[in-house]
Length: 238
Image (cartoon, rainbow, N blue to C red; front, side, top):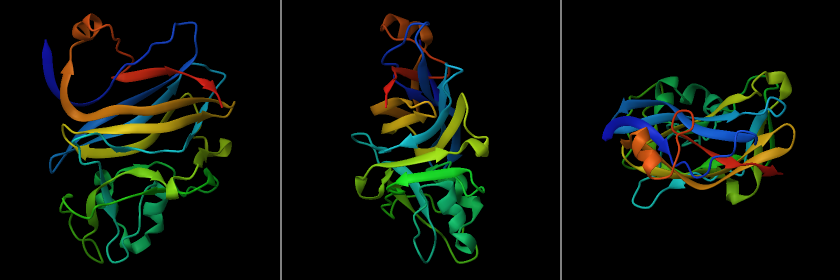
């Protein structure tokens, strides 16, 4: 039986044996935010108590074929990029958190000593057209549109939660992603750990709402459900 629901679905490509350590990347908190958009939280889970998750390296989240991409919100007047929570905060009086739910961004913020950035900064694109018509706040309405989350110039870049931040762990929320309901994005990035054993995600698809097969159907297809619509890839040394 097929059921329709506003949930983001990751394809289950491989399942490690129970004796093998793995990092599970999944979409959680799927939310219909209106304007034909669905938001999800990108979550990573480590099943090895000795290896904690601490960062994201070399992200490139782009539109799948036939899709528009990630919904983006930039500040009015200056059009400042907001690929991270910190960059939203850096917008100061030009940024309003009333727009936050509609923006695609990484959850690295300006908390004192919480984040370490290495290499190229995280960045994004914004078409400036077709996005949600968000209300004005202070200096006017923001620029909305669709684009990608990546690094400046596509160069290697890494953002880490420091140990002092208390945000490293076996379960870590990394990004808030927004897309048109029913459309898809392709995920490419590396989930890093403080032990140096990392998880590479390469071109995997996520759908913002749509038709979700029942578990029995997935079993018949030779796939398996992991957690809440997640997928497992075997880890390799950095």
